[in-house]
Length: 120
Image 1 (tube, rainbow, N blue to C red):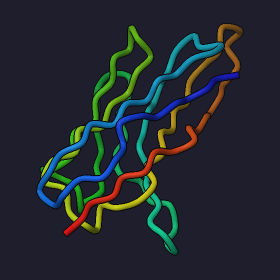
Image 2: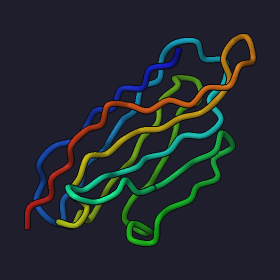
Image 3: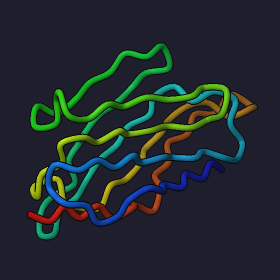
């Protein structure tokens, strides 16, 4: 079983920055992919960014040039640096990761979410 815990959310003014962290723990042999998703009130959860173990990244168009996803494979950590935040970035941000356990079973886990609120 793998647990993900997000941190770093909060209230920030438009134009400000936040850095989200995702700590993975449990029966982890290897984390293959990590990603960040967000869900605004009344809307579906959407993909924000993903990163492979080798560092290949992918972003939703609305955050390109403002957000940077990264990871520390040695520490089983993921990060999302968010700059030039806009009110439309407001929502609950969720970490997602998938990989292999020590007995080579695949797993996919979600964190509990951290709230990001951007005021205008």
